[in-house]
Amino acid sequence: MKLSDRKPPKGFLFPLLFFLLFSLVRGEEFMAPDQLRPGMKGIGRTVFKGMKVEEFGVEILGVLRRWRPKGDLILAKLTGGPLEKTGVIAGMSGSPVYIQGKLIGAIAYAWPFATEPIAGITPIQEILKPPERGMDGSLPQGSDGTSHPTPLATPVMLSGFCSQVLEEIAPFLEELGCLPLLSEGQGIGGQSAKPMPGSAIGVQLVRGDAEVIAVGTITYINGNQVYAFGHSFLNVGGVDLPFTGVYVHSILPSQVISFRFTSSAATWGKIIMDTDAGISGLIEAKASLIPLEVEVDFPGGEAENYRFEVVDHKSLTAQLIRWSSLNALLSSLGNRETTLRVSSQVYLQGFPPLEREDLFTGTAPSFPLASKIADLVDKLENNEFERAQIKQVCLKVKVIEGRRSATLRGLRLSRDITTPGGRIKATLIFQPYGGTPFEKEVEVPIPPTAPEGLLWIKAGAGECMEGWERERNPNYAIPHSFSQLLDLIRAQRGNDGVEVELVSPEPGYSVKGRELLSLPPSALAVMRSTSGDGGDGLIKGKKLFEHWLGLDYSVSGCRSVPLKIKKFLRSRR
Image 1 (tube, rainbow, N blue to C red):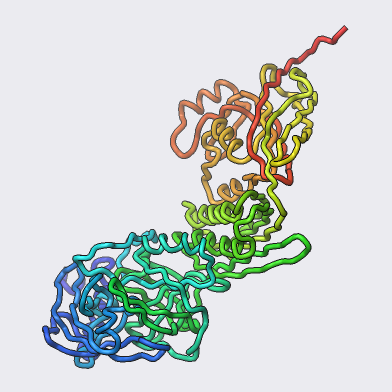
Image 2: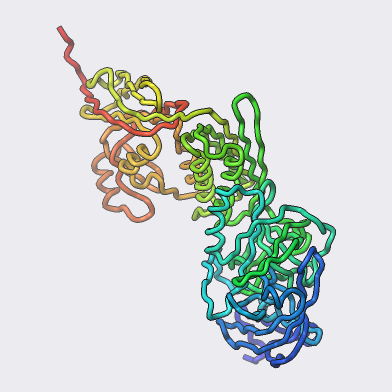
């Protein structure tokens, strides 16, 4: 075989084309680290006030070779503007640096507690390099080292949130290496400015009646492609995040890390990639966000409405939904003792909406309500079967004054022995908070095919019934497809009632989520002997009857009583 006939190995062509293209333009536009020498001087560009891009001085100190795998770091001293007083400023990440008119990279690293404005610069070659495969979308942990250069903390500006929600958001962001700050507001000033290298840029996670926006600086623009930050934001690979212009109000000097007070301006496009060498995106492209609407209805007809948009990302969406919905509820209700009846709808692409009713009560019931909807979104976003395309989330919350909780205290039957085909009455006894006990009756039909022996009538709410169901069928909550997952979610009951069941000890078998009951002993023995992984297993009982008893209370507790079945009952003389 001739050498010219050999095909390049798979995966080799694209990096080769990138290298050749980069080599053609680097001499004209870029300068590589091996061309730099200590003492070389140039300029950087960033925003210190408003949306005006200003220049500052840069002096090269050296290059740290292979300071991380496959990566160099350029060291430089910064001068000019407020930098002698502030040091390197959080939010300058991505600020482009030019030597002899050629772009060498982006300011991205610094040393906490440094007494001089010394910065680490990510080379432009690494910023423009195609991302490596294998990123799973999970969130990184922040670094707290001080002896090595660390990525400049990404300021995340927060606006519209009440103090209790801010107390939840701050530690979450700090774990990611971000710097949570209160914003000066949304959409203030300079909205007609165009993006350019050195412009302040904001990556939005939440917008609407509250905002979460990460702030950095644009490094390089090529056509409609934009590169920024010079280090990762979340380092999760492919993303779909809107980015905006940012207005800088002022700078606060600090011995730890100085930062800028900012607010968002007009939307510029969307970020599509987040790697350890920076973020990149497209100007004038539109990100796909998930609308969240929260309506709070008070007694007397008054209502308050909140609207948000949150990003669609498996590691972020559920948490952002929680913060946003909790913020809406606390803004309207505070921490007072009350009862909330919520109707929730989650709209999915290609499937009927998930609709649920639930009731929460006590002091600050907003917290468990927000957690419940966040848990639902998390199950959808992180399912193992397919990408769940959430189109919208709506919460309609009805406020009921006072605390409405009740405990199931007792369960009695009209008789403890009956025949197949008969009917009995089950009386449930409830103790409401601050009130007198009350009773509810449920008529329980006995199937004509009910076997002789002992059956059980069970009644309970919430986690208690789920515990019983796991004992009966350990694999009941293990879905085997996305459709099964949705069915399981729809089958879950809220807190506002009790489930009444008639259960036979008759064994059965579960195969990939399907219950096979009334099996002959021989068939059951075969199923046991051939069972494998994947959620197959023995069922310890068969449901003969189930009934949902809805109540205007948040119910806790469970009870069970035996019921004896005999084919013939002796008549009393």
